[in-house]
Amino acid sequence: MAVTQDARDRDHAVAVPPPESAPQAPGATAVPDGAGRTPGVPDAPAKLVFGLAFAQLGVMVAVLTPVMVTLALRVAQIVPSADRGSALGQVLSLGAVLAMIGNPVFGALSDRTTSRFGRRRPWVLGGMLAGLAGLSVVAFGGSVPALMLGWAIAQLGCNAALSALVACIPDLVPEHQRARVSGVVGMMMSIAMVLGTFLANAFHTNLALAFVVPGLIGVAGAGFLCAVMKDRPAKPGAFEPYSVREFLRSFWVSPRRHPDFAWNFLGRFLVFVGIACVTSYQVYFLMDRLGYGEGEVSGKLFTGTLAMVVAVVAGSLLGGQLSDRSGRRKPYVLGSSLVIAVGLVLIATAHSFGMFALALVVFGFGEGLYLSVDVALAAAVLPNPEEAAKDMGVLNIGNALPQSLVPIVAPSILAVGGGGNYGALYLFGGVACVLGALAVQFIRSVK
Image 1: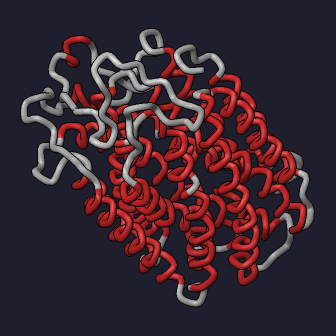
Image 2: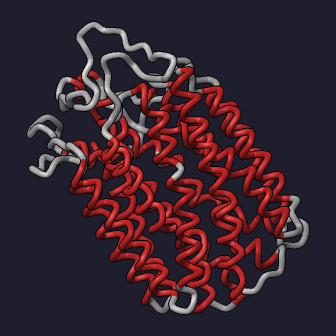
């Protein structure tokens, strides 16, 4: 599922110093104390943690606002109602495929970047600027091909930023603090959902602003992180030239040599299949199952998402604290995935907005627990920490691929029993989450 360097490549790997915020005496054994801190290893600076969270919020609000609300509304503006589902699937699927490809590729390029500005900064800020340009094309394009082009540019740019951003956690955050930081950074995705639906509702009379404003927030977050982070360029000549061969190897890590990485990839992929069922089809669920009109959807979605995010924040903070204190990751992944599955089952059976909102609260609490340990677990199973951006980018295929596959398979699932079978779709997502929880239990190197 993704690639690592073999022994020959490791001989040429960049020697990345440990996080400046986390020195440790040679030969010392890092054992967290009762508060989850490792003696002699200070926490990452607060401004760095805030910068990581702000940048994550910016990228996520730029990507998720269209996925959740505005792309569906934009498609509805230019496509007859009978064709809107398939047209939305085309746009989302293309963007998700490019995101899947772009994450490991841009990650590998970030690992190799020798710019005097560092190897993460150029991709975080440059990628987000490209994302803003793509969102502007979507905002003002008047046809499905124009939407596809703009969304493709937006996805490539935002994923270039994301691939470098995610690598900053193993680069700069000490291991004993990663679940807490992962929880703070991870819950930005759900806060971005609230902010995105708020912006969509605020700008429903001028939909173009509902695309451009999230992009500007993304640029602001990227700029702040670049200003506060300590970043070093890769050493010139440390890597082989980025050839076609290196490009192809960017998508593969041997499951035989690195089974823990493979199990984590599979588990992440399956859990995000369940999450994608919610994020991609909430608008049409509210319209088709609950009977709300286009003018009411943004407001209802904002209310439901706000309730969900309160639960996400609670789950993220609780899960991060407990996981770091105990030093365990797998039990929290198992429990959180099962809670997400319960939330999906509740959505599948909801026939009123109140039940839908309650289901989102359960779903959100499970998602918060999951996000609090997801990145910490991923960092612990990286095959080669010297290539954190590339390997984290490969793991992010597990996030991006469901965004492509779910819109492809969803029409067939929705058609079961005569059409509009959202119960079947969300039950499908719940089963995927349970399987994802079980897959992670096969990881041996992490408790």
